[in-house]
Image 1 (cartoon, one colour):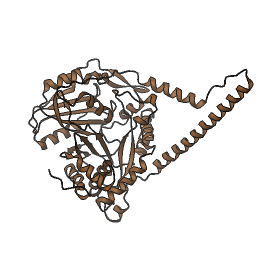
Image 2 (cartoon, rainbow, N blue to C red):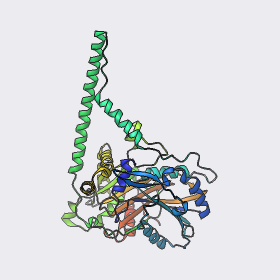
Image 3 (cartoon, rainbow, N blue to C red):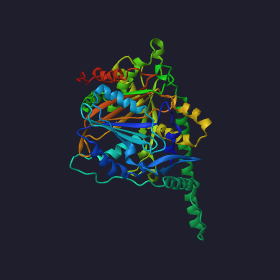
Image 4 (cartoon, one colour):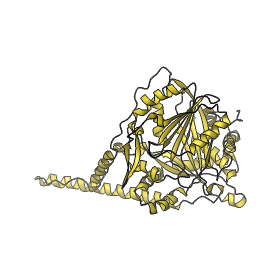
Length: 463
């Protein structure tokens, strides 16, 4: 298993399980349709038949010898109201996945108010949010009459290309071979060229090394978050909620009116909701430091020979720690300060550094792993993930997906996760929080949406 995948097994915590949760509202989806869909299409990814097994000195993928799809699908016939559904989904988030089977499971609630609900929980070691989004994009076409054309992937020895690429990098660093020539002048010219090339390579390595040292030093020197109500010891009981859909055009209008990006607007909404929940005020709030850990896809930043195949599963993201201006008095101030921070981090190597540190966690002895995790995750009080969906509605097993929501895990002692999902021209906010740090997730979401009304180009929310 690749270190970047096994890292999530090393970070597994009974109070904070490392699982991704996906929820969809699907019009008319029935149990027979879903079973056939899973059997034919979902299981085309061989990894879903495998389970992680610890065999020192590493984790390995091994096939489940008694795999049965029935172990991974529950059909719940309760007629959930919206509030009952929220409680039921929260209970599933707190339900551990058994390690003696592949670590994923679907639930279908076909009789819920507002349409069928499809819930998936999958351990982060199988895939990151981008990988899962790509799977659903392939398996959920834009027409109910259309079948998935290309899908599935073999489970192969993932380490081979990484070892080959590492060998190639080492050979490049060692330099070109110096083959003797009989022609003295030609040999002299080639030697000069080789030494010139070696000098350029060493200069580039020195510059890159200096930048890496500076980036890493800046990361370590970044102030830890101010003690607040969001930094309490976790209880291990989590609640989740999700907002009503909001038109993506509202965010576009605000972004255009204020000359920022839509992502800046989204983070500003989160900052506004976090501010009153820190439990601090006065001079302490004015000096408060609070970061959000934001996952960033690094696939395009990897060398070409290390970039994953389009259909492959795995974890290829780093993390940036974005300071949230919780001391900002007005919505516009918060928005422009977030714009400054996101621009500063845009060209940062921080995502790659974070990805490398996370990948090393599974290779570090247990006694040393917690101190490294503390250095890394003490920098944030919340995780904020932005999951881009398709601009048009999609269909799963011939049934229209009306809404979709993602929740990602919060490593270490982070107890608050905020998910922002765009899909079919609408945006939804979701929150998952440990009971110790947030007792009213619904009010948190209301504050996120209220911030839109305070910004230029926004308008009152109509629910």
